[in-house]
Amino acid sequence: MHPIRIKLSKYLSKISTIHGLNYVSDEKSSKCSKFIWISAIILSFLGCFFYFLKAYEKVFVSPDISIKISYEPLNEFPFPAISICPRTKFPFEPVNFKKNLQKLKENKTLSEDEELKLEMGLQVCQSNPDHFANLTLNISRPDFLDHLSKNHYNIPDMTPRHCFDYCNSEGSTFLTRTLTFHGFCATFNQLDFNDIFTDQIHDDFKVYSHGIKSNWNLSYGYFDSNHEYPSKMSDGFSKSLNAILLQDITNMNKDCSIYRRGFEIYWHLPNEILTHWHSSVNINNVNKDNQIYIKTKSFQMSPKLQKYDVKHRKCFFDHEKNLKFFKIYSEKNCLLECLANITIAKCGCVRYFMPRDMTTSVCTAKDLVCSWTEMVNYYENIELNPCGCYHSCNYIEYELFSITETDVEDDMILGQFFTMDDLKNEEDRDKFTVIAIKTTKGKIEERTSYSAYQMQQFISDFGGLLSLAMGCSILSIVELIYNAFNIKNEPEDDEDEAGDDENKENIQRY
Image (tube, rainbow, N blue to C red; front, side, top):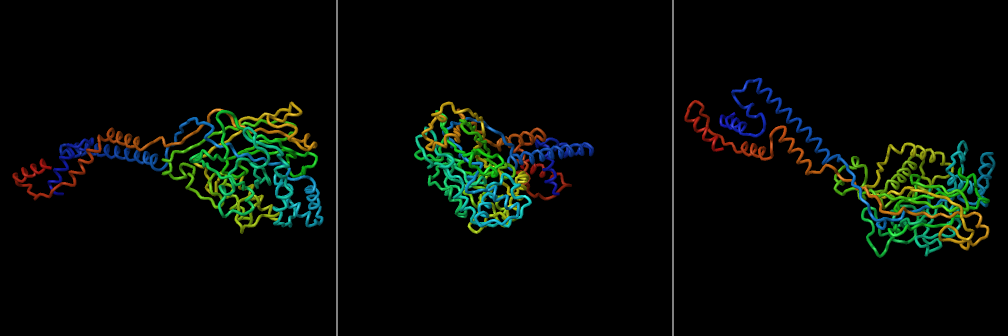
């Protein structure tokens, strides 16, 4: 090395604020002393380096998530979508499911009409898998869905009178018939077919159409105050969905449900279709007034967390994961589409309620053992998450708060909004149930996730550690780099004192 550089490096070591460098460059220091100081410098540097890696991971790779809790007004959030599903799917007559199932068990020949009715029953009476266990199912009627639609309980059969809010509206105009794993259900406050599904979905799912355009999404809320759909909750009073439910207990296909009678009431986000993963309550008894209260929670994530990988934050923002059949991503929609993909890969078909395109066939009775097995395996191993279905980063959660069941006290007044006059048929007056579904009053708890470790804290902590462990600052590093790149080559003249004096002058100059 050029002598000027040697002396300059010694000089810089002596004037540097980095601890220990002056002892390393001091010629009077013993080898043992230099070794100790070099070891201390290296250990301090490594400690700073490993802390830097940890801090870097928190800022740029896997953030520490903190939660900020706030309380928002009810009228900024949609009332949940409500799905009302009958446990018995169709009347005992003309679809005698028990008789046709018994003939199949006894290996008797079924007529085409009996095969069709048995196919319908096996498809929607799935709550009892014993119906087709150990049976030879050679029945294949792809047209069963059309006939199921005609024979299944319809909305007027289930809910002759229903209303929302002040109950100024009546009839079935805002209850949509929806295709679900329960067969056909009546759903309130769900988005329209064109707002939920992509163009690739099968025409069978057009039953979701009701023609009301949505002006809401999970990320931005409502964006048109002149048109509010889905319907909102209210701050001033508790809006409610009120309905009279009819169940003819004398004409039920009791073998179609292990629960025999009643209804399942589900609640879910308006942008989701009903799946097995949504919560519900059972309405079993007749001549009862049921008050159901639902509590709402909101979960938001700071947009600044989008820079982190999905596997670390465990959620998707709106634009990050596209589904084939759904325009709007949600964890439930993703899980259902994933189940459909697995079923078609293993069985060559999908169940009638699973999303599919126009070229995919529906599993008929002969495929039920395969499709049922895949469904059970999927549900039991859902934590494996084979399709990477995380929840949305921004979502709303509805959960049951309370439910009360009381006797109808007045023979003429049903619940809060109805009278016996709403039951036009005399025979219906002994088989009705009244429900009122409400949201809890007060503000909604909103949990916002954000990174607890920001860039400013990273710079402050790392700079403080460098200063504490090594006496180093940004300016001292800049000074060393600046002088290292500005060393001039001077002629070597170690033996001449004049040359030494010139070297000293050069050192002082730089």
